[in-house]
Amino acid sequence: MSLTDTSKSANCSAMSDVLNRIGDKWSVMVVGILSYSGTIRFNELKRSINGVSQRMLTLTLRNLERDGLVTRTIYPEVPPRVEYGLTELGKTLTGPISELWDWSAQHHATIIDARTIYDARQSAVTAETPRKIAYARG
Image (cartoon, rainbow, N blue to C red; front, top):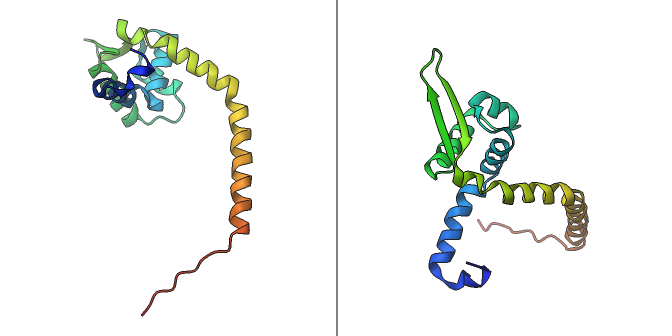
């Protein structure tokens, strides 16, 4: 499948469905950490991902497991030990995610500069445009 196939409804639906799962930042972070660390326990994973709440990490892991990208292994110990790892399908995402991380690191400063220029231009346009005031009739 290629970008030329986007006119087909099934292809668009497939792309949308997959991007809804792997396109959110927590899923990308989880897959990235698991690809780097291998099998890891929940709390180690949580410590590795700055800013993720326990609830959001739990939901993300469940969704990734449901989609066949992550495995969850429970060991019958006291206290129970739970480890997460990538499935074979999940491992196929490591290349694209690694490329995205590298691209982000390489271009982040340029993107920040572009945002600053854009915001300054928008502020100048807003300052030049007189504000319209709406009055309520009463």
